[in-house]
Structure formats: C-alpha cells, structure tokens
Image (cartoon, rainbow, N blue to C red):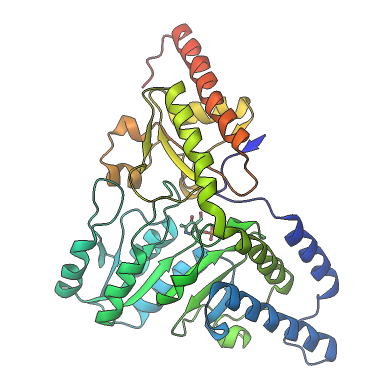
Length: 380
Ligand code: PLP
C-alpha cells in the first residue's frame, strides 16, 4: 500500500522507534523522584528540552511537553477566556483545524470572530488591522499551513500586526513543523506541534509560549503548568525524530517538484480535475483535488483497492462527505465539496510513487465509470 495521507499522520521513523524502545527499557524511573537513577532521567529529560529548543530556535523554558496540538489549542483558548472579561473576543480564520474552531466556540461562545478570506484560500490580510481596531480582541489564532490544502497563511505578518497592538497571537503550526524550517515561529506569542506529523510517536507534542499557560494542575511537572508524570521515552523519541527531519528541511522545495509532476499527470489523466490552491504558496507535500465526478468516498475506496491510501480531508472530519470549511473558503458548490480528495506525501515518498498515484486516479475513474454505466443510480 502506498501511503498518501501523511497530513493525518506519519509512520514512526526507525530512529524514533529505536530510541523509544531503548528509553522505555532504560529510563522508566519517574523523573520527579529523588534517588539517583531518577535524577539521571530528569537530567536527560532537560537535555532533550535543550536539544529541541536549539533546533526550533526558542528558549528552553518556553517549551511545555504535552500530548499534542489538540491539547495545546484547547489550553490557549481556555486560558484567554478564563483570564479576560466576558466582553472579550477571539479572532480566528474560518479554515482552522477543529481543535481550534471547536475550542474557540467552546470557550468564547458567541464571541468568536472570523478573519475575512479571499477566494484563493488565504486570509485577507488588509482587513485584520481594522478588525483589531474595532473590537476588543484578546487572542488571535491563525494556522501556519492548512492541513487540507497545504496553503501557507501569512502568519508572520499577522503575528507582527498583533505584536504592534499588544494582542496575543497563537499559531497552530502542527502541519508546518516537520515540513518547513521553523526559524521565525518564535516571533509568535505561542505555537504548537504534534510529534506524529513528523515521524515521532503519537500522543506526544509540545507547546511554546512567551507567557505561562496553565494546562492542568495536580503536580509540579513542567513548571507546575502541566501536572502529570512526564512521558520521557516518548519525548526522547519525538526529539530524535524531529532532529532527523530538521536536517532535511533545507531541501524540501525539490520535493515540491514531485508533487507538481503528479498534478500535471493527474490533470492529463482527468482533464476536468481541479487543484485547490495551486496559485498560492503551499506546502510541498500536499495536493487537494476536486475530482470531475463521483463522491470522494467512492474515490477513496477505489484507490484503496488499487493500493493507495488517500483521504477526503482532515482526520477529524472523516466520514463526512462534505468539507464545509474548505467549501466556504473557496466558494465551492455542495457537489464540488463532495468530490474533494487530499493526497499528502512525506520524505519517504518517491517521484515514481507520485506518478503511479496519478495513473491510479485514471484507473479508478475508469472503474467508477464502468460501475456507473451498469447502475441505475444517478451519480453526482
Ligand atoms: N492542528 C492541525 C493543523 C492539524 O492538522 C492537527 C491534526 O491533524 C491538529 C491540530 C491536531 O493534532 P493532534 O490530533 O495530534 O492533537
């Protein structure tokens, strides 16, 4: 099976797996305990924090290890709703991941404002300052790279606008970290990552913030901000996965060429196929397609039979035929939004894999056409 759903998750790397297994065996002591063996684990733990801080380009004190981006995104909205008056608002983009959108609505109820967007899937930067001037906004949140289309958002510009006005800016950088160099992320007030997006273990991530954000109470771990026994083996595995990937980030634009060749070939196979966001800067690994005919679940199933794992969009909205946020952002019709397919690669994906996926789209189309001509059901 050729895996083209890396934006949902990536397989753990050999190095991370080895590190994890070894550390589970050797470093099982509770880092907070007082005997020497535990202090040794605590010292190793702090070394991993330092190592990550150096790679990411932030202060080691600003890192909180946690279970991943969903936890970070919830914590930030919880913090700002709790610590501000009931008239304060938050501002987010309409195509944020559900862990931002749902957290914003949960903690801020009807005090969630949405950034205006242009028809090409980017936010309309020119309107942000006006909104900040008009409303009492305490938290602005914008993703660095969209999980479904791969479109890169002007997060650095928004971060600067917020900085000038003293408004806290959170960046959901879950799809960005491990795909692009993170050098400028430290300009944001806070940002987050999930290890399983860059070949690390699942249920592990980190959050970086310029101010203390309380995750959970009940112990002194992570400077008392996130209580609970630390999962040191997973932390070590995450940092080793990231450090391996970090070295490869300088040459990712060469890999965009593979994706572009796939897009050319798939457009030749299926002339009426459309690619979302091809006119704006995107992650090198992602392609979001609107197929010419048939619903996306039929495509996923046919491509699966042909040996390719692709997706209909975010893993958090799987099973839904329609992708509402993408549809709104691009002004798609109901039918078009039922024909969206996302393909996403990672460093292990070769050019020949991309090209055989393009051919498989052609084959799947033939199979769906043949089935449809034998069926009396009208397809969309
Ligand atoms: N934010 C974005 C942009 C994502 O793509 C994801 C996962 O797909 C998340 C947040 C949530 O990550 P996790 O499920 O690892 O908590």
